[in-house]
Length: 150
Ligand SMILES: [Zn+2]
Image (cartoon, rainbow, N blue to C red; front, side, top):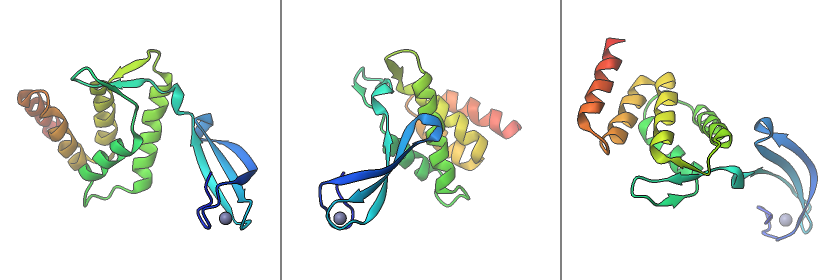
């Protein structure tokens, strides 16, 4: 793990503890060159299923991509970055519990929508409009009407 201060390639672990209910490991490291300390969060990514896209391709779950999409949907809304991080943590938790080797991207989309719906309704409509546009406009309108009824 490269030192963020001097870019020295070697560091030693001075402390290590499970993070986020065991899904990640938080390590305190000390640079072997400048002796400054920094923290790393290591995730156990190989346990996550591959994402099966609509065109049949498979790709690894990309946390940053999901966060990017949610950030866009939450633009100018009162949603903190921490709330979004926790949302994606929950998403990763569900992926870890997924029993198959592949998970359809549509399933992840549904999970994200359910989560956003609980957080911010405007962000939900934005996210849903982008997401549903790939499927069926009518479906989106039904979704929107359900939302307006509430
Ligand atoms: Zn250093």
